[in-house]
Length: 137
Image 1 (cartoon, rainbow, N blue to C red):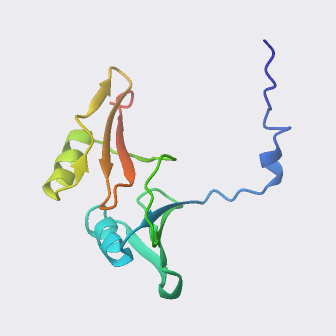
Image 2 (image 1 turned 135 degrees about the vertical axis):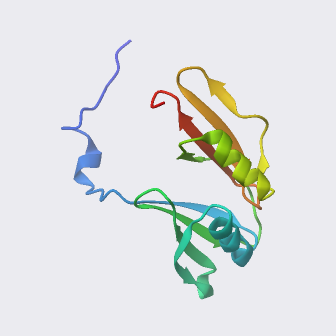
């Protein structure tokens, strides 16, 4: 089996001029409620808000990673990318979120000597995840 592996030198992406920023967007049913949740529960900060478009962007704790929230008439929470945030102590982070009544999907999963993972949801059911790198411990 032959695989066509592109190297950095011949990858098309090198011509696109990526600047290191990333914005991931979620559809939400109530923009104000979601802004409050992301700010109060996760500690994000509003970068800007466009009321006439029912859109806002929030600064996440990850450098140059923004979360966009768009209020939609018909919310459809489906698969897709899961924002996965690294934390120093997943048990502590999970306990703090559980105190805020954040809903988790089962127990924290441990892959020995590699990573711990915990999946949770925003008020509309958008999936997010925490990870703790066990190789750094």
